[in-house]
Length: 374
Image (cartoon, rainbow, N blue to C red; front, top):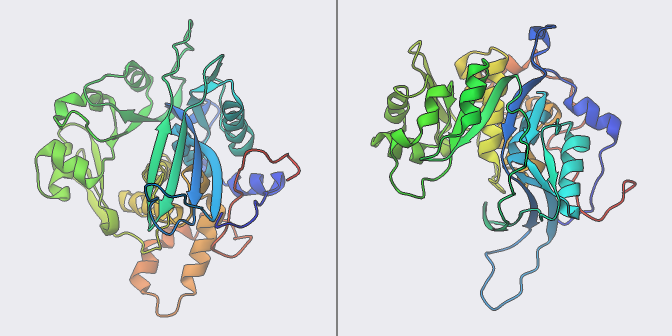
């Protein structure tokens, strides 16, 4: 992005970038067909970058760069797929060009299983325009709720894990169904528009293994004034509470074992935080399914989120193993590097492929209108 021409990644390079399988040593013939299942709304995201400030009323602003990509739940699905997890997404897609583009980008570009998704005739795709400036972003969205299908598919499928976005005061039956099948459910939550912040409104937590709110959400739900105290209080409702602390990293408590861990954040130049929370959850799910220690899971989730905010866009910025390997190689060569900080990520040493290109990397920027030869 940054106003530069669109770059294409060849199919062979894309396959290499996602070929590392973090669960390779755990797979067996009786495994479920997918690693992670999720459902939700897919948006077409149009991201304007290179703005010097917020748009001013009554004026026209020009952006120096622009990109487009699937957004909404597609941010999470893409982050999971780029980390090598077999990802299944159930979503509605419009039968307009935007819907066709998003479907192709997810299925062909990212290898996401869309067999449980559907195209809705006569329904236009939801759209979000995001304007990134000064390390933040402003978004404007438009869309209508997709009509319910006459015959819903048998959801959810058998899966190792599922990611659910909880809606305060509302139960989602598929979450209980997934848990009954033995699926490990990881949940996050959005802002409570009702202002109640009542943990009783998160009834589906009883079916979840882990809950990953940010510090503000966690403290409001627990009526505490400390994120760490909030994490401990949340273990009354869910086994594993993971609270993200922004620039301070993340803190987690396992209520079943009493284990806790805190990992500081990686200092980076944040260009656009869109999708960083989704990337954090994807990294934590990956480490959990791989059986890593709690502190390593937190460190990996924080690392992937930090790498994502250095790029613009939601699904565009989700890092894969190439980006992680290139970062690890680069950071070890930084003069006066703190040895203790390096040791925190030493568990990556035996996991990562040899970086094919120097860090930082630039992924392809999908842009509607280019042909396949672009």
